[in-house]
Image 1 (cartoon, protein in one colour):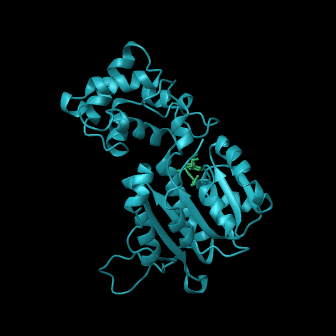
Image 2 (spheres, rainbow, N blue to C red):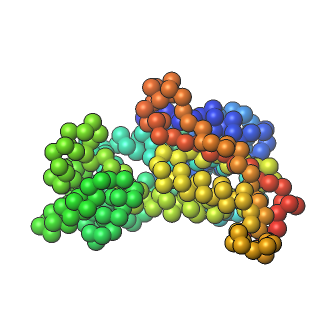
Image 3 (tube, rainbow, N blue to C red):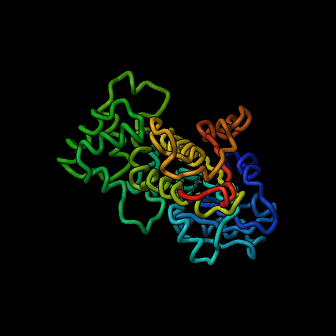
Length: 315
Ligand SMILES: C[S@@+](CC[C@H](N)C(=O)[O-])C[C@H]1O[C@@H](n2cnc3c(N)ncnc32)[C@H](O)[C@@H]1O
């Protein structure tokens, strides 16, 4: 199993790792970013919702075992994780959203439209909601919404309708059956596109099953509170909705005041809590993309916690 880390140097450089500082990697995966933080002397709290990722990384990071705490949890629970470990604040937070190569490549996990398997797609096998539940249980309008919003699927309406018709006869149980249902709903010209016709549908269902955007919102709500003064957050997104959530949070953190423009003076009392370090997102260069095509849509944004004496509310 391997996973090529995306924007590795750029993301870890952006954290300004200093020996003895405490860093939270919320998407441990196969430990690529974590290893780099450890090599630079950081103390690491490494979380992943996938128990298999923790298992694999424990091995890979074993040379630094005394400086790592592994946590099987969602990064949306960052405040609770730090509290449980008795850590007041972190000096850096890094997340590299989305799925890892081992998750996509392990057929039985049901993430892949090219491998036959039961419809699962859970990153954490202990969580109850599976892709089978979403595909067979959610109503047509909800399916259309996720296909359109999370998959940016042009044929969302046709695919949602085909899913509902097919499951009325018998439940859609496997990745093959779902891929075939998607194919049956698409016009001929869409089937001739370079991209696999089911790619966007599988992405949408995966995002829904794992509540990926909800997780990012919970993380963003917690970041200014858990970072130490001068601490940094580095976030790598792969989907436009992920990047939009990050961009909006960065803007709100650095704007401070939320009063309507018509008011002559501020009454909300909010002041900036973070400053944005990357005015534009950092994206991979051609060399990285040709070595690792998965990096193509990656965007890295970095922000820094402002000292608390300048902040009053909104912490
Ligand atoms: C793109 S991979 C990370 C790869 C890692 N940075 C590396 O270099 O090996 C994403 C990982 O984040 C995990 N993950 C995704 N969403 C999560 C969440 N909300 N909480 C915790 N882990 C999550 C996935 O299980 C997966 O292992």
